[in-house]
Image (cartoon, rainbow over all chains, first blue to last red; front, side, top):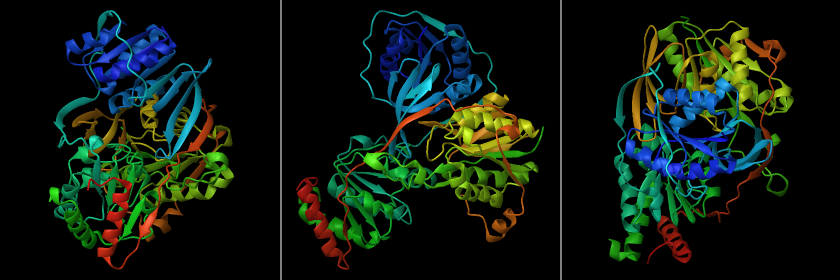
Length: 305
Length: 268
């Protein structure tokens, strides 16, 4: 066996299978609750090992056992938290390389060659590691594989786990798709209270924009739902216009907006790093400037008023 | 069961200072190191838990980026922060044979420090990712090697019981509450607390605490990095950097609108 695919969802399986096929005939380790979805994963024509748990510990045990019996040269998976945790355990127990957030992957003969972001994605790194290795990929780096035939589905039991789940709660999400918005207003710690975000919402309304925020705004203060968190570990956006208000410009945030066509910054601190990462910067107190900007835009864009 | 806490502290390349060398290459030698941001949250959490567990706290740092001589000052600064904040003593492994390091080296060295010194912490805390490489794998590797239980992306430590720890773990769409048996390795996210900088008194006390600088031979280990870095390039995005600094905000707003109109990003 040349490759093992660890798949979390049907949506990532096609891309992972496409990359795995570069190394030979893959097998798939799928962790899903629904039998139907596993049948769809089997439609790629490779054997599927099904684990009925998405716990990192369960995945680790299943992957370790398959690693021993199948002896794959490469394990590929998605760069998501459960898989990252499971593969860190596997890589540690075997002392083999684990590379994550990979954007390019190729067989370099005796080594695996790859490219990934580095330094909050301000730098790209090309490197190589010896086989066997585990590579977790970023989404949408290749076209999904063609489906072909029907692979056998084998159930895999991992036994009792050490870490127990006491409870699960869904995050409060707005369902807003920031990554699809043409104009986004981003809010940062320059805002002093949740109520004050109305200044940003007023501006967004005139522009037909969605509102997102930096990590503390969405996760610590919970002034916005968590899916409005823009940044390297949150949403990555590429709108035509991104207006950052009261945002300092930390690399973890800016990497999430680097694809924006035009970036505007409003910040009262002239030395804030955002100004050298923006096309247009306004040095001003947002509490004074936003109402003026909004009212000027209202005159210009009357149909939205 | 011991009641000690080990905190993994990394001196990371500072992503706020990305210098470009010849032909767009990333100039790593001139990038300063600093304590990885989320490790501050791990230290803060250790300070909170120290009084509950009643044991000792030690920090472990492995120098990844060299040359070691040029990194001495930055490295010391990161370790001093751990000592000032909470650690009773600090272990630092500096060895040019493992530079530039990789996660295989780092995890083996951390385990090597613990084993060679006979340290058996009940909890090992680390940040969820380092600010330079951000691969989130060293804590899991350490757990697997030691046979500890492991929970990554911990947003809250709810309770430390006699033989287990109850935590909230952040996953993409949900938060789960888990009970993990001790000893355990936990990686924490920056939501877990608000790190406070050490006080002046703490900083002064830190210089009196033991700082053990060890070599690879000093922990009886022979390990080599498996990763070979071929190329590093700075990602350049051109931005116009026009800054409006007007006393008259009405004017500033008008100018900004004019610029955006010309860019074609306002649907006027």
